[in-house]
Amino acid sequence: LIRGEFLAAQELGNTHLIDRNFLRGPAVVEHRMWLAAQAEGLVDVAARILRDEFEPGAELSCAAHGDKCRLTVNATPLDELGDGAKSVVLTILSLAYKPRVLLIEEPESHLHPAALYAFATALAELSRKLGFQVIATTHSAELVHIASKAIGVDASIIYLERADGALNARALSAEEVAILTKIGIDLRFLYVF
Image (cartoon, rainbow, N blue to C red):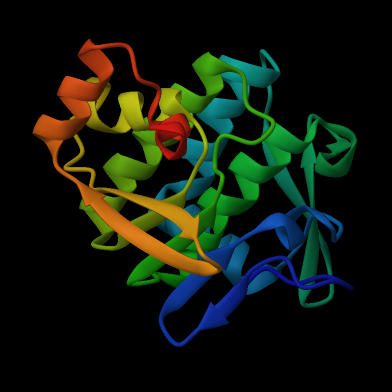
């Protein structure tokens, strides 16, 4: 798991949680995780997204310090790039630990549309290749569209709403989502109707 002075991802059995605490620590990873990420091709995937969406010509490397190593992009610490680039790299590299389930909170945070598409596409491909399931929370209609339409993920939408102090979950079928979208209702505002 990625660790530094702060917890960057939490391992819950064979489930990884990627949340807002993910970006708090420095971009330091266990050296053995870096080697596993290289062996799985994850370093190449992360570097490709960095080059295509954030930093043309980017090369991702890891400067070893004992059993840890500091991530750098063209000799610049990953921490000095934006939160979006850092989040993409750390999330993809964390897959070296082969989770069965990846819980990710608002994966669209800090990502422009093209980077979100590249990241979501990479996660979908890696999910199929490595055999893990992705469960994401989002407020992004764009992410739902990318997942369901652009990359063909069988996405389930569970709408959470609070009523009379209780939290209720309502599953929306693909047909319901299509109808609501067609008549111009943004799923994020279902509580109004």
